[in-house]
Picture 1 (cartoon, one colour):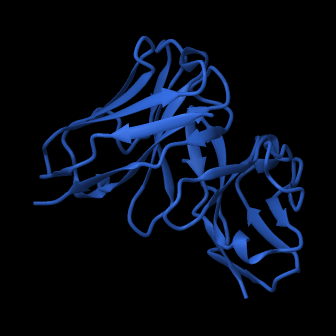
Picture 2 (picture 1 turned 90 degrees about the vertical axis):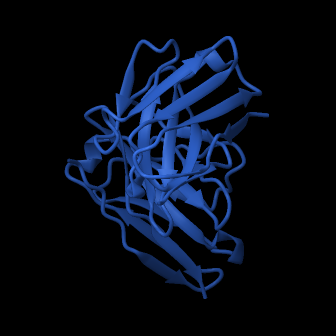
Length: 106
Length: 122
């Protein structure tokens, strides 16, 4: 079965840039979606189809197009960005999530 | 505003059954596919099942295939998950999620409910 690999944790100082990777076999051929999940809250879509930012998501969030690994970049990180981040693709009629990356703002 | 409200979570013994419901509002329900996604304590997100706009296409994760059944009633703006033969590893917070399109097997999950907790324990 298809596996998406994310680093378990990423730490960054406020104001700096955080990069979260999502690796998978031939992932550049798939559309990657990214979700932010804060503790006690429901997941929120923050990036669709690699690079499309849904309404209300700050421009500080950006994605890579057809990259391998796929990447989510958060510029000018704020304390409120601290959360778990999950990538997601479709493979053989199943939605696959990465294991998640915990972003810690130092 | 899109709203998804799950219910039906409970404490059940292994081997028993449970039915989850999700009532949707704020969008044209029968224009979109719908999904169930779960998160076990301390774990990541796991897709469980998806259904397209008219129930014509359905898919399940291997971990629940043959035990869980997803369905929808477009006249009631409702999504369901019938869970049979529950196992301890099914214990999780179950989220109802709206697809970005009509299908059951593509795209993102653009809106999520707050989840309903299923506990499986003897």
